[in-house]
Each structure stands twice: as structure tokens, then as C-alpha cells.
Image (cartoon, rainbow, N blue to C red):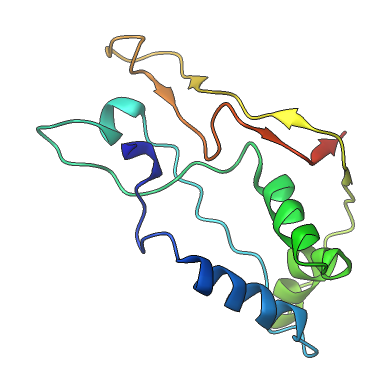
Length: 142
């Protein structure tokens, strides 16, 4: 799965649980969301001549995936601060006043996201997101 390649390499389960535990015990707001969504074309992720572009595309589902992880660890109450408050506080910025709503309603992540334009074969002129084609338990409501 070249579309799953990123740097640094995805962490082990022990590392993932360690991060969630650090967030759970974060009383000073030192942990906050930072996404590095990488929309590399499938052609760039699987080219035998160019190697593999590092990065995973999460823009279509990042908040829902964070909600799933936080919910599974029993720290859903920490999600808003992690996503919306702690980073602004750390950088001395005003908090964003825009609100979003998440619901525990399953949805399917697209298997691929077509991208228009370019001279690349349509079969590889797409982006494959994290958890492509899988059903996740959370949905972002508009």
C-alpha cells in the first residue's frame, strides 16, 4: 500500500496508546492537533521510477478519525481542546469562533478521490485517503 507511506513512519500501537494517554493526562493543554495532510496522486505514490512520495491524505476525514481514536480511549471530552483550543493558546492566537458538529453516525471514506486535469492516466490520477473504502463510526455534520 504505497498510499500509506509517510514520514515519520506510522507509529506502533504502543506509541499510539502512549500519545492518547499523554492527551488524557494533559492538564496544561500542551498537546494539540497538527495535520500534515498530503494529497499526493496515486501515480506519485506508486511510481517505480520516482520512488514513493511520503505523506497520507487525511483532509476528508481527519476530525472523524480523531473522534474515533479519542472515543475508543474514553477521552472524547478532550477532543475540542485538542482540536480547537490548545494550539491557539500555545501560539497566542485568538480561538476560532467557527463550530463544527460530529455525530456518531457511520460513514464510508471514499476509496479514492479523483483529481481533474493533468496528463496522467485517469486510473492513477486520484488521491487515496487514509482508511480508503472503510466505514468509520463518526461523521462531520454541516
